Length: 275
Image 1: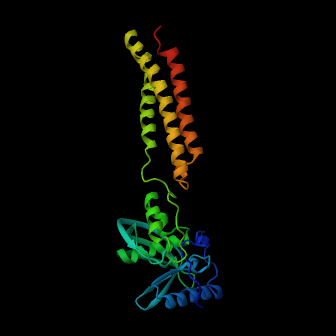
Image 2: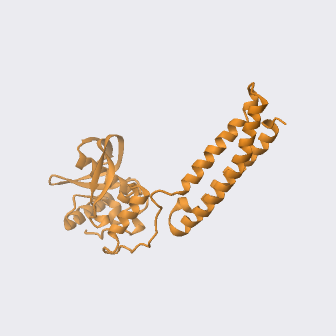
Image 3: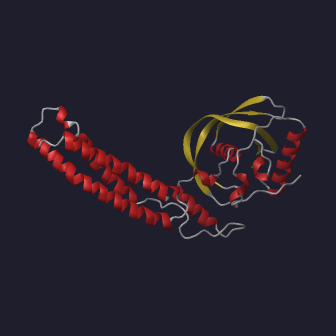
């Protein structure tokens, strides 16, 4: 029977499918639904979850035959390449992702017997990987870097049931706040190094210079963390759906470095200070 296809942004597709255990009547009904829908929509591949059946079953049209793969698993994969793919779920919008050309696959046939398959063809391999992705709660857009997810979603906005995205929905491609952390971490590293200097035969003058460094580096780290927190909160408001921009994450970053700086400066007072 022809079934209704799932289209982005329908989130009912975002679940892990369960394994096929019954290869009798229920299996045949699901297989028929997939094939009937493929013929109606002129598709060359379709997973059960794309039509609402939560089972690890996918069908690929090979020549004129509709071949079923139950409980498929990729055992080995190599030879990565950029694969530009279209699928019904994303309204046939082309999306380029990383795939592997050479695959070793195991699956169960219509009788529940274990089978193996070798694939060494880009088109066939990308189809296998895309269909298996659906069975395990992954779609093309999930395989994109965060900033490319935004670009892909915007390109599809307004098509069919696609929502119009807000101005700043996803993470920035490169956050400037990392520079605050990078400089602070370098200062902290040398503060830590200074604590080990008394273990060596180093003059008091050198130790005094290092202690001066510690006294200067400590307020600089605090200032950098204040700057980081202010800028990070600005990004958290601007990029509402960015998980790395959220206030809780930012507080954690600041606290770890402030506490570490406090430990270093107090330790330096007793260990490095030559007076």
